Length: 301
Image (cartoon, rainbow, N blue to C red; front, side, top):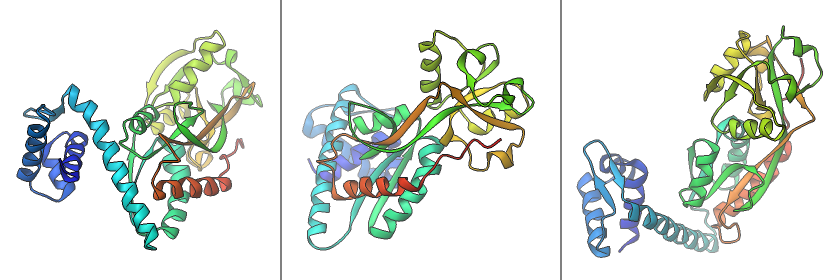
């Protein structure tokens, strides 16, 4: 087998099709099909199931996909080590990002600093829910992912800390409080923010022996804020997930910290930082430095 065959196999699995994989790789669809057939013949197994609408990886193919990514990752690390020795900065880093906290608050500043120091490194960013990012790291689909810490399964680099806040319409009776307790929220129509927030909020209520009266479950921040703005419900979110201009775009919404305070830490996760490529290790260091200048958006009324 060749690195090219493994690279094509990984791309077919991620794109779930030969045509899209060929477009991403800049080769013909027939070349993609030939590479997959050759790899399947050499291994004497079926890696993918060819269907009309999409290509599905077989159960064995999913296990071998992890190995393929591992091999390609090690090969990339070797290329980068050699490039560093020659005084060059080349290679690829794959990053998994979730939600506004990492995609809007952390990544822009980190990438500016990273690109300034390593302009020759190609950066690939995959975005999804935080649970998906964790799985991408475990499957070696990405080299590094943003995640809520702690996570003892991986090597981690803490970056920022914020707190969970309740979002209320300004005219809501609880908006007059400096802080609110979870017990004060359970009788209110509740909007459960999905895409990772629910994984923080639901256990929080459960640990307190409480159950919010969920009226809506929403995955889009703009929809959640719109419903709070109209007084159709309240919600709880991490402070850094909120837009910087919240008080300008939604002047009728106020944020109040929970009582007692509930903190959240966000950082980077790696399968092994010590074994990561030079590009990934450099990203971790630059991210740590760039995050020092990031502060929560504040809770001004």
